[in-house]
Length: 450
Image 1: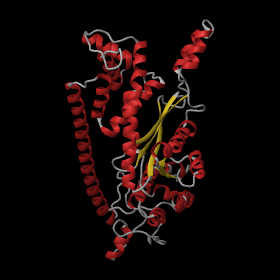
Image 2 (image 1 turned 30 degrees about the vertical axis):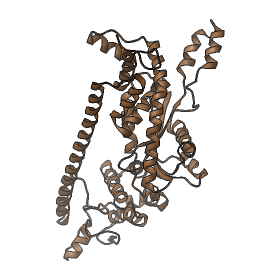
Image 3 (image 1 turned 135 degrees about the vertical axis):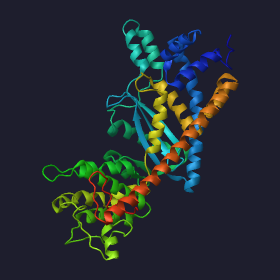
Image 4 (image 1 turned 180 degrees about the horizontal axis):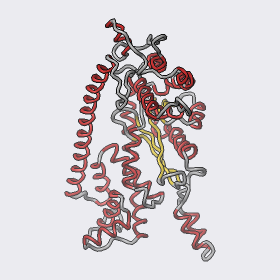
């Protein structure tokens, strides 16, 4: 009873069911279970399900390409030119380093980041694997299908960051000029030596580190074992100070360098040798006491000189201008991680997915991330000839809930920030009278804060 779609023999209900199965992230088997519980006729078989995926993919990709081109133009408008700063990252279909499929993407930088380009990398083709069953029993058909099909394999090598992700990011950068007439002048990514070699080859491109991942690097640099070692709490404090030194001075490289070195100087100070020349009275207990004409005891807040000398080499690297200029704009890959969350909600990692399935889910994820759930309405109109009243109502409701929960999250973040400021003011008051509590985070020095 379902009507026939335009320019095809496929039925409206079958096309919508395949789109819905991928939209909900349940696949063919999940769709069968849903129909059985709802007491409605079972969906098309798995072979026709796969054929419908192939039919849907070009239409979704065409709309996705238009969405990404619009995102590029928005980014160029904000940067006043065709050279923009982008955030590149990769994600894998399977956890660990044995994934057969991966996705890399480049997003614009800023509070309203959008996907600019995307690519899938695969080490396995589902059709090639299936053809092995007839390779010897029917070699003629095997050769015919083998030569005509579009192989999904487009990557050879390991699945780790150093191979699959780097290769994918390079491809996106290489084709940016041809596809969109744009140059990714700077890329925010996790620091990787193989990526650095790529940027060195292209003198017009440079790489910036994600400020969050750069903060994480401090763990490995500050580790000291044995008696009087750096305990976990101390490293957490240093990571917190280092992050704030970047965030508070992200537009001024010289101030950022001084703020990082001020951490070392402040913590290595003693009553006999105070080093607070780069500190500010707004957060330094020593300078506050000096202004009031009071004595200040460094003992509760300083670290042993042996430890500070041991970690000085780490600070020399972390405070080097070449290191800090990579995070000067204070960018992060949070937007990339948000996109990954949407992508793998459509193609869950605990469910097997072919390259075509991932391509379709990636195309849908880009449209949803850039333009909201209602962006699927014109796609359905082209595929089926009619979107449907309840489809429009449902997609609008999903977008409204998405906006509502985002505003709710931001309100909580603002409220938490105010609570942290109040707690910090209280902490500063306690430090001014040398009230040191071991169960509280030692924020006696936070560059540029409080």
